[in-house]
Length: 55
Image 1 (cartoon, rainbow, N blue to C red):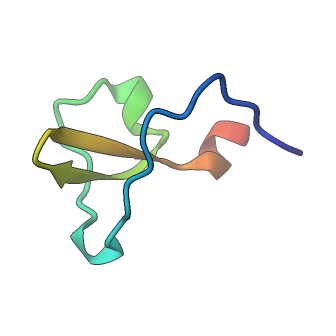
Image 2 (cartoon, helix red, strand yellow):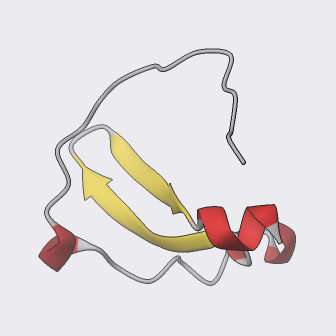
């Protein structure tokens, strides 16, 4: 199985030790598909749980 994306916006190096749980105010449908979030100077980056999406 493979995934096809339309476009890649940015590639951001990820320090797994800085990964945080998604905020509770995120839409409950979306939160089920996130492993966590990474805070950056420009905002939050959601880390997609690919296994949850595929299932």
